[in-house]
Image (cartoon, rainbow, N blue to C red; front, side):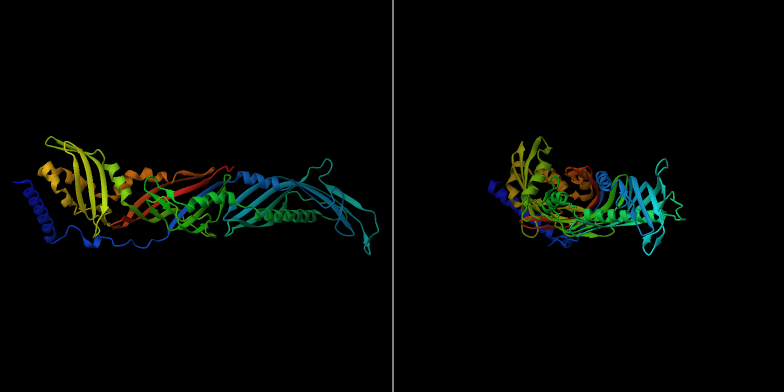
Length: 470
């Protein structure tokens, strides 16, 4: 048979096989499984517990609070009326801090000393000598007292904090009963300490209201506002829509709460930041469950897919009947009708190029990517003359059909460590994120001539740890 006649015969055989495939009752490709467009993307939730080490802030608050509270004019007497005057001094110990659901309790233990004098007044004028008495002066021990203060805090939309501080109770462990004309001055002294504590609380509220967190938020906003590399799977833009924070609790020098980022992420092979934000959405307050539920539309050009396939298949060797070839490069091109063409360059005993085409589909229920109609393209017809029909039909096509079927669950398990690496990193100095993924599913696949689009859903957990900030 002449070469030209052989080529025509092979082409006719190929066409006959394709026509025969079309004639069977059940087609190789189920049209209902071919995606025409990706479904709308639901909102994704990054609900991340935050552990913030706040001992330095507690030290700062302790330094802000006065060690002593003195009556007006100390050490002189303060006249509270015509017939009575007193002076007192309160010395505090270290403060005890607790926080439950945004309600901060501040307990201050201390001791006080007090002295008072009493006289008899007629028509607003003293008419008898002053009779004095005291507690905690000289050899007497200072009287013990406990001050309990409460601060309710609210996160503001601009990421500042508003606090409302009040004195819950001032409890004297030792009463000061001074027998000055049968006068117990303990209540008066307690009122004075409470008034001074309220003044401190108002000062603390005003100080906190001026605190800004721009230096901490700016690098985080910049990270969120630009594309993030995803360990070889492209670049993700989060597109934040809302930020929320749960009530705060405190234990072991650490504040604990859950921060939530609602977003509409997009993943692509393009690393260019076409749009970039440098701010976060207004902050909201609310109860938030932990966990990550991410749904993302990913768009990859065929150049990126070429790189992935070439890396996977390069140097893969096929051998039969003394013939041996090794795959050098794999290229993919989009065709009409949601099909793609694979070009495979190889070397070895024989050197050349194989062309295959097929219709990639997603079996969503079984989470399998496959190309059920994968077969040789007519561009490969001349290759069969070089390699021989047995080698051409049985070995290479078997390998490629095997590689054209991907179990998503298996793929996830094999790449879980690499995916988890994106959830374990330093955000900025002193701020780390630690976590892991728990599942990955594909919702849709669309094959176009210029690119491949896929919608994927991933779940997992992560924790943001804020340590010592410089």
